[in-house]
Structures are given as structure tokens and as C-alpha cells.
Image 1 (cartoon, rainbow, N blue to C red):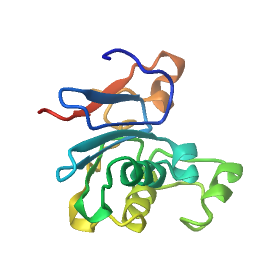
Image 2: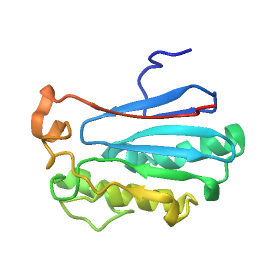
Image 3: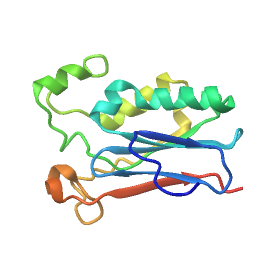
Length: 161
């Protein structure tokens, strides 16, 4: 049934005519499609989601629910806060040790990209936008820049027929 499903970091559907979407303001939207099995996912990944492996968990859910194979998947990593603007304290930086060397600036888009690759997606089937939401104030909302008053960008994907 159309409408708001609730709070969460990932939605998956294979229902024709149904779209799933997520809202972001510096976190990364990741849209994943399996054209063979006709299933799509919208994933919201901030630093907590990246550390918890939200993309890998979503891909596993697609495998379990409809038999998707990672080699068949296409993924787009949309605009999010880039390394140039994503400075974190040592308490956050140390949580990225499995993914990057300890430092105060994190390339979250690259962390997500590498997690998708480790989940079995082919590199040539992953597109990175390379756009920083914090730098591009005319085009995107940014929680880091606008704080509590930040709007949200919506990213959606669906199964058309």
C-alpha cells in the first residue's frame, strides 16, 4: 500500500508500480536494482549505517527474498557529504579502522563503494556521484551546513511493470 512505511535505513520492493524512497541531508542515498529479478532497494547510509554494513545487509535481504545475485545488481551512490567537509572526532574516526586509517576526515562515499564491492557487486556496475552536499548549497540540503533547519533530498527507485 502506498504511503510512509516508517523509520528505517533500507526498503526493498519487487512489486510492480511501487517505488521506495529515502530522505537525506548529507547521508548518502544508495539505489540498488536487480533487472533480472525485478527488485529494487533504497538505502540511507550515514556514518552509523556504513559502519553497521547497511548496504551489505540490504543485498543479503535481496538475495534471501528473491534470489538476487550480487553480480546482477546495479547501484548508484547519490550525493552526500564528501571527505572535504566530513571531519569527525577521534571517537567516530576510530570506528572506521576496518575501512580506513585513523584520521579525522572520512571519505564515506569510498567506504560505501568498497562495501558494495566486498558484497559482490561488480565495480563497473556501481556509479558514484562524487557530489558533496555540504559544498553544493545551491543544489542540496546539508545538515552539517544548515543544522536543524536543513531540508531533505528525496531519492527514489521503483519497479515500473
